[in-house]
Image (cartoon, rainbow, N blue to C red; front, side, top):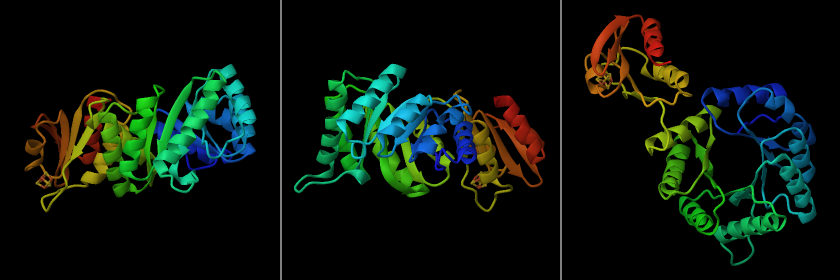
Length: 316
Ligand code: SF4
């Protein structure tokens, strides 16, 4: 999801390009005002990736987004409630053959006495789905996110039992990078292993690209997606170069590739090639030089940038 308002077109396009560069499959943009809704056509010209408009309260924003060529609308049942206006959105979405995601979120739900959050979220979702179905609309995607792993599990399990519509999953307000990734991984891997989830988001407070990288890594780890896996040693007193810097460069350069390859970035040539012998290709530090290896066998030695280029040429 972008952070810049779509009305701030240059910055929003720059963020879209950053998300594209790491292989984001779907990009959501918040639509808080009319200027943002009217900017969608320009944003669409900057990317081939489908864009989703997240509508804030005003149904007219959804109608403008659809006119501007958006690929999907997200409606929060707590924010867009008027059935007459929802009918207008449904008619426009049907005419353009685009889906609507009914996206309930714990942060925006109002709890009545005695009701727990999972019940409240499910009821909000069900109410909106009933309305869309009564209008003959079935291009529906469902999502209901909590910030608690247990609640997220119960809620999405219930949704999956009752509906056959695609489900978007995520853990809301997951937090800073490390705790956010750990908690979201725990939540989403349980759901995905149970066959629940068609699209996903890591909602992290951090650099945009990390959400995409975390999501792709989770899918690769579960065997649900192939791609280049970059492994790196944790470094120790033997380390002879900047492992983190070069692992990041390689990871970003290979982010969109879908071949099942493992690439290693190791701190030293003493142990690195041996420790990473399962990797298809790798680099290891060696003082002023870096060694390039294949399946644990050293093949070449040279300056870091030269060996980096050699490795990337093998892959890309
Ligand atoms: S590869 Fe070398 S630098 Fe990295 S952890 Fe192993 S011994 Fe230490």
